[in-house]
Length: 80
Image (cartoon, rainbow, N blue to C red):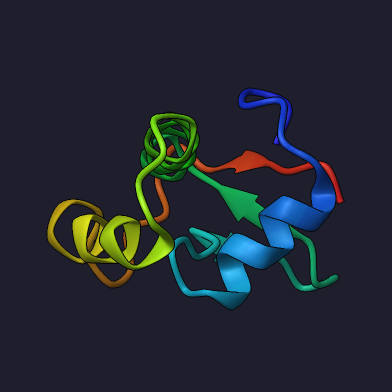
């Protein structure tokens, strides 16, 4: 995720924690992310830097960043 400057490991952790999900997965298995995901990652980084506990960040994500199924427009490639 070049737009956010995060490491590949943090990206994978966010996916594993189900805080974000790829907007689309290509036939070759490459994950594609959209602007909503970039915004969510930036929010995560901001809240983490402010010292919010992980549990509180998860609650905030549940309310703010719910993806609508099938919404894959504007997807951009991630650094894998």
